[in-house]
Image 1 (tube, rainbow, N blue to C red):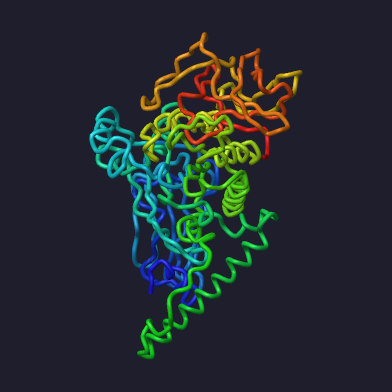
Image 2: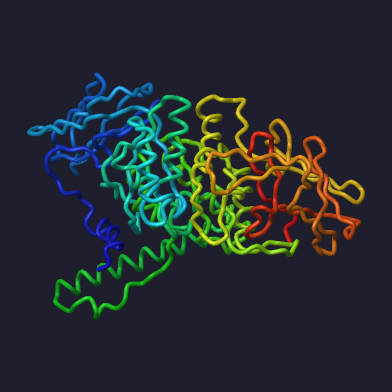
Length: 517
């Protein structure tokens, strides 16, 4: 039987946990970070009815395991602290002591390969040499991370999480840490002093659908009924197949006579195994860097991001910040002014989602991509751009400009269109950036024309546009389009180097289109 079914089939057919000495759930280990400012459940297993005590930071709590051997206590909301503490769980005959526990902020780093991409290792940011250089430059005892294995399940799991132990970000671990998540956490820790915990919970190559949960599906009337019915049918078919397989093996018939495992839909499966077991573990927020595997879709992808965010927030029970990384430039360059190829429409969907979902934000990466490498190595700028949102929303830097210009309006003025933006900051500029040099500010080019704008009339024929900055807006026009009705900017697979609108804070404008053709 395939192992990944059957994390969940086993849970359906035999739900009782194996009991032993009292112990905490696997999300708790040495070096963990517990979320500040919220009640923190500590849970685990013991013998049914066994009394369990939990001690942490001067507090002591008692409970008893239920008939299934499950127990839980709640630590009260705590202030952040970089002072290491012990978390002690004691049962009738044993005691588990977890050391070096901090209280800070925990961030879930979700997505596919560009979220999972490490500082070292295969297709890493810079291999072991860069990781070693990072470690040699500084040690970060207040940044901790825990890596989740790739697993799937039919039903939401509530037992042991599919993760290893927490690890301190130091010379021995940096090569295996999510690069984007590390740079994000490092910037937050540097600016606030608060310990940071990273839940490295992602899957290279995954589409978005397996990370959306049942609550997220139900939140979207556009496809909720159809998807929910498909998920229910898949679960029923797979559970029935698992039951037949178990019965066949018990009778000596053999699995081959049962027939192949039905495939069905993949919705919810990664969430069920990789996220559901930790939803009691409070977090400060989540980031989401994904979209390559859904790259052929249009703006409808925005609804899937909305479903993912809504479902995760429903599972945790509160509206935490949710930050999206827009896909970087990739593939060969094209010159057609209409664009729309490659990931152009998915990028626009990511912009729409970030401007629609409450407490959300968008880290634009259009200027730090790579034409031939789907894994651009500059994850420092990605982490820094994500951190801006958190520094404003979570850590109180209310005056911080968190984004480059995001489209918000257009108006036709004679033979031109005036485009308005959010996040203009201290002004719009033309600028350029070396995509491979992380942390380097774009260089303003005040005499250079704005590039990347196209314009069309009612005939839907696109032409490259002349564009000029006018205060906090951009005015676009084209001689061949006397009556324009729509504008596109950087709306192509790889506009890197061919689009140059920034704000003076050094953040690039997001690609956008105003039409729905």
